[in-house]
Length: 169
Image (cartoon, rainbow, N blue to C red):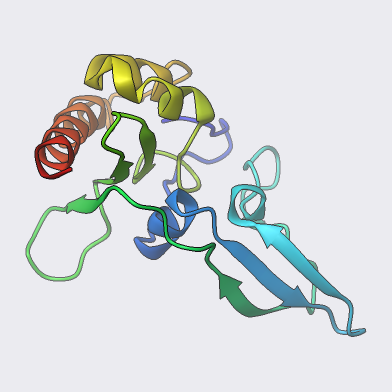
């Protein structure tokens, strides 16, 4: 729906990467020749472009050796996954959020893009409310007839998560 290409409209299936993106995780790698790299998760997943089969910036033979999370931030942390059934299933939509007492925070979504979806403009809109955050997240959305329902699902899930987080902070 967002950040994709005409060559591939698949969404990222993971849960943990959405939370790791929210927390500004860094992926540590080592190449076959021993060269180490630290890759912010924000830069780890590639845009599909003309090569949708290449999902990450890893080079051939490069291995992930660790994932580092920065020191914890305060506020209320919530992750919610919406799926078709109760057993294991990829998220139709997932929302991870951190809300601070002053109304600021962060939000990341899964199931709507080729990678965990987080953009600074949406984070900046948190004090203005759900609609402002939603508008920033999906300003560039190009849904297909098969996934248009995710726009409504994402907005409702986002509203639920932010309402709960604000009530608990």
